[in-house]
Image: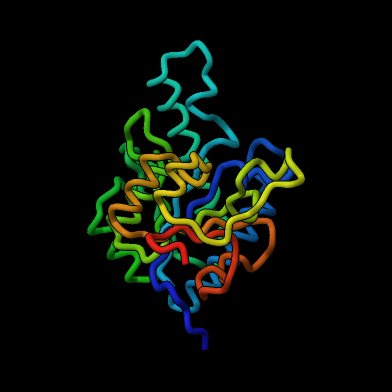
Length: 239
């Protein structure tokens, strides 16, 4: 029997993480592995919400020369593709799942309704939140922070291709130093690439801790839920 530190989590998956080593599109070996890890959490009694990015398909800022609003809406559609892919992988391993979107598309998903999302979580269904906030100029980081606050999540698990937060890009600089603990103010003042400033401020205002960790190592999601020392913890207390 596991003694989980967090009972209701918001798992934020970047689109790039879903692409695996390909760098583009969806690597179903990755989504299937994530599905199995989430299934283990559900079997532990953990309630799981998830937000997926769309950067493996399209980012709003990728549309150079395009109207920004149009480009951002295209990015929202990309998150829906990823959400359906993750839903399929979860259901293939027997996990009940619902996709809720901020932009109504009733043929493929439910509209986001907070009370309905909460009820799904209570019934051990994974709820995947897609289409961002439904508004341009807001990232999926902000979506994760907003939905985490709305469903009263205990923590945001920020799964990335790097194993924590560094003072500079570890892929470019061999002397990059990883932080074990940070507070929100430090993240904002140092301009660290954890989440965008809107999302970070939202987490700070609502006292939602963020754990940034690498998705590449199997079992890391479970370790984070159990409270094991992994990646970087961002909270109101950096001790």
